[in-house]
Image 1 (tube, one colour):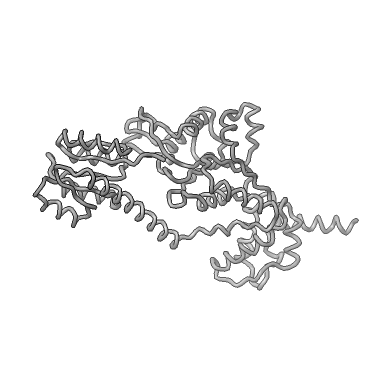
Image 2 (cartoon, one colour):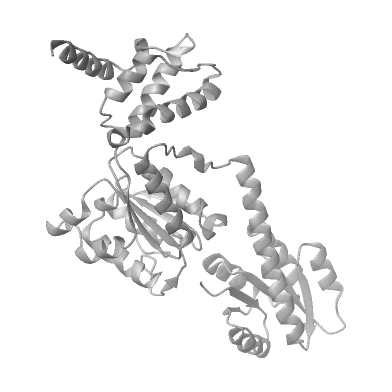
Length: 404
């Protein structure tokens, strides 16, 4: 777990030094700024968990600076620092959103308690916001249909890994088997569910942009780097990062990813400072990484690092018991989307679905049903609106059976 960061904004060097000593001893990472301008800059760069702000600064009033902090980071807890007996500005600051204030000389016992409560309150607000967002856009883990024995085993393994402290997970399976959905499920079942879940398809971004997308960059790192930008790794701190199509990473970027996975630290492009994060990385591929590593297309050391907790998702043709329940699940969803009341599949369509080998897996099944649901006018889906390649497959199977 990374250390919580506290930013001290005070023009008195002795106060900053004294606070730094105490806060460091309490296992916080301490940042210092001597004026408002540098305080805002540090906050933007480092994203502290709490700010200690003097009410009187050389370049602006602390109460005005408080408003600037709150405009950019509304949930950031701020503790005001004021001289003993001079609390008018502190009271104004409380009205403007400060968490609390302390007076000089500082009572460190009281300060420690105030900081603890402020950070816990901020965490609670994040948790409440998470549940509010969850109600608005609820993720339902029942979206993974597991009627077959093989998928039951996959889900049981996913639940065990989600509950563990495993920081690296590898999902393997053909395209369309639901690796992204399983990744979301693992996140939702883990202790990290209140934090960010960030996904990226490694094949969708050009190689020359992927490193800066993952790790961010410093201002001036390259021609278009007009300002600092945090990467997805940093934005996923304390949460989950999903790297789809991991086999498409260049060997150079594989080396940088390996270093990050082993140390949980990284440097932004153009940066010198190591940044530490605490995230779970879930990777996914439809390729045989062991074969790719033997052929020199994928680093062996990275493959071994990723392969600690592998989960294989079988293709749809290997789990026929899931096909009809999946179809019914998609029909229910599309009934809501298209405002229809289709009850299910004709028997002929069920046979067609069970005989077809589904090279596109769950994705192909979902797309086939979406098309059928758009055009179907009866209560049950007939073969009339099923994609032609499925019908051709079924016709050839029927002809073959009759010939026998």
